[in-house]
Amino acid sequence: MIESFGTLYAGHVDFNDLGFDATPLNDRWLNESQLNSVYTKMEAIAKVMDESGFDIFWMAEHHFQREGYECLPNIILLAVHLAHLTKNIRIGCGFNVSPMWHPLRLAEDFATAEILTKGRTIFGVARGYHSREVESFGNPMLDAEANRELFEEQVDVIFKAFHEESFSHKGKNFTIPPEVPYRGYTLNDITLVPRPINRPVDCWQPIVSASERGLRFMAKRNMKGIVGGGAAPESGSDTVIKEWQRIQSEEGIETELGGNLSVGFTLHIADSEKKAIEEARPFFEENMKMFAPLGFIKGLSDDQISAVAQGGEKARSANLPTLEEAVQSGSWLVGTPESITEKLLDVQDRYPGLKYINVGHVIGTPQEVIVEQLGRFGHEIIPKIKPRTVEGSSGS
Image (tube, rainbow, N blue to C red; front, side):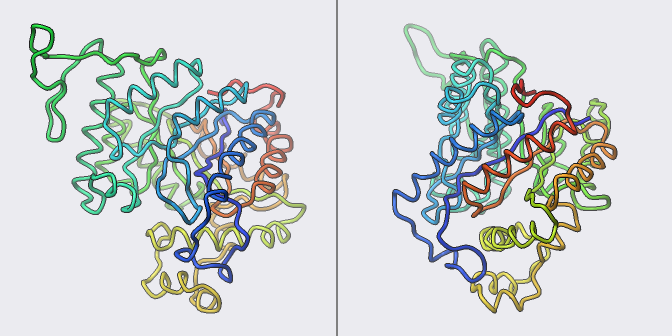
């Protein structure tokens, strides 16, 4: 049963041009004023969510993106700020890229935010996917095995720090504390100060590759997962949802299908599906420019990825995936409020354990459009799926 609605904003600015005929991604180099506009955009999104019955506003940590696509480097700090501007929503760290942090620093900062926001900040971690980010902080990204090993050890350190009154850790990457003299004795344990008030701490992680190792790591630690790309029958996401249930069961966690997951969709509402597709197409194309070179658009050849980068007619003649196909596959909810409500109710029927849904907007969608769309979704769709007044939302 769907109980919670959220959205994810990774910090993209409003662009002057969008789509395959617009400025190529690597040619975008925005000025400081444009880059800093993400903060007023973030505030506007949080406020409309707070007033429209949403539960969780997720943000994602990214660095060095002068192109203007993902420009929020410290989402824990922003969570504290947004908690002072809103009353109802919770603020999700979706996600802190752990390999760019020392695990104790991340644990301390989250605990501080959780206390200051009176429990409204949600913890989330990820391995990262931008080599420019992770490698620039001196940690591995190109070496996938080293990245995963570092991430897994960091999560274990953070969980110890959160949940044990005092702890020590010896691993491949960290020895905590170091065996050094301190005030007349040798350190052999430390205590995180402060620790989160709400323990055990819920921890969320994006599910991308959905490897056996990754899913089992999460299940063993009672973590929750966020899946993008909708949940159409027989789709890749559907397979992941079923695999996640199987692995949780093997680790002693019995859930109905969809349990301990949030499923994400891209949203665009209009008075007809045709109009919605026409309005959303530039956003779809701009998003492909960003994520195709990073390998997030599955099934593309090297020639197709090159065509996306060149844009224009090269992109249009490269037999790329279309927005119509994304709508058909169920990853994009594009259409009237009535048709989108029907699709979400179908998702609820097929996944009885699914409590969390994210609806969001891809790279390039302007602030005015996001605010209007989330307002419509909150007032025209949420009450039909999760009956309650939209004036107040407690989150979950």
